[in-house]
Image (cartoon, rainbow, N blue to C red):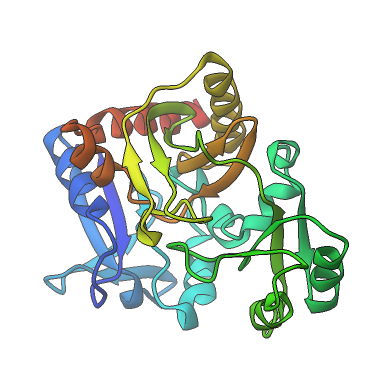
Length: 293
């Protein structure tokens, strides 16, 4: 029987129902499912161990078929845990450790092969961002690695608060400006194993398209040109060892790529009545099997 290890945070309220969907689906197709607490990881006798919810001890080793990290766990222990998990075969991770460490922040994809599809973007400290806004135009200002539409602002030099906004965003480092583009046809796609699993539309409440920021999901389909761009993105992500992601797109632009446990499936089922978890899981399994076949 094939085996998958999920790593999740037992002490935190989940932001979506992904873990329940994934674990139930893998069990339904004959997999042995083990869920380990992020914070229980430890090393003893040269072996990486972790505990499940019943405090049973499991060794994390190359005998496990797949690993799936659900979220990041505590920030204070994140880098330690990622170093330990990096010792395991990376082709067995749905999204590899390297991608979770280096690709979670928005600027990474600007420097990748997908950068050409993003709106004009500027990443840096306070003076650079303030100077950019003062040259004109309307911009979206946001953290490099934010979530749920938090701390996302529309700014221009006509806005009396733009300096304060940018100073706050860059108080502890750098932040990101992105040219404001039309999002009237914005769509969120689920990508799994290099394929498009599904899509829904996003009707923004304001300049933010995130559902947590009151954006409303709508039923939609992809035009041919949108599908071509999405497939290009899915293929490129697969080459980066990213088998599970959501893509926010307002053609011809990519607005955001989320690889950190996005909650697309729950929203899509509430919108359409369709559960695409099995389709996603099968696509991911096939992609992982073919990585080093």
